[in-house]
Amino acid sequence: MKLLEGKTALITGASRGIGKAIAIRFAQEGADIAFTDLVRNEVMEATEKELSALGVKAKGYASNAADFADTARVVAEIEKDFGRVDALVNNAGITKDTQLKRMTEEQWDAVINVNLKSVFNFTKAIQPVMWRQASGSVINMSSVVGVSGNASQCNYSASKAGIIGFTKSAAKEMGVRNIRHNAIAPGFIITEMTNALPEEVKKAWAEQIPLRRGGTPEDVANLALFLASDLSAYITGQVITCCGGMNM
Image (cartoon, rainbow, N blue to C red; front, side, top):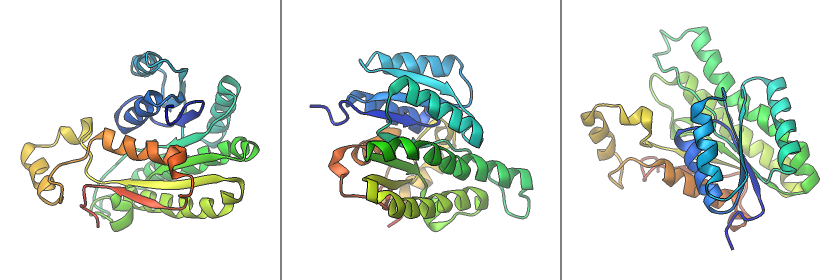
């Protein structure tokens, strides 16, 4: 029996990167997949085909995760198409890194809205669905910089720290209906964005990590799979770092 057989997962920002790795891992374990990204384009359609080829129902939705009304519309559409949502992965996120003295209000607002407000938007929209089911797992993508901060990332760190507070509070509210909320805090993960860094920068990062390597999107996806499955049925309100020991 596959770990997510008979379950439906909704993953935001999942056309590529960590979100896509989570979608693929969940589909491999039998979950039907609804996923979102800002626009419906050839990247989304390719991801949709890749997921469908794994023998599950999969559909991508154009969604502005930072927009409250648009999120409610998308979740209503997903509920109509899939009938239920057992796991929500709030993965949509952006960076606009710069030192605080140079940071503009637009850079602050954009990161807070996409990274933090989107978690409120999707969790709020999915809550009635999971409440009726009396079950559900919400997995919020934080970051080690939300735990310990990072220079030139005041906006990003604040958004990711906010996600941790939100996760713990929602877990306390919704545990009564068997709805679990946990956060994943990835460390240095090798994605398209980080892979473009110079080799010496990546080497310097790896030397700070006890496991001596950057993480992969699949490392994060395996942790998300555990939290979405019934293997973690008694785990809620937790922040689990996935960082190779970088942030102990």
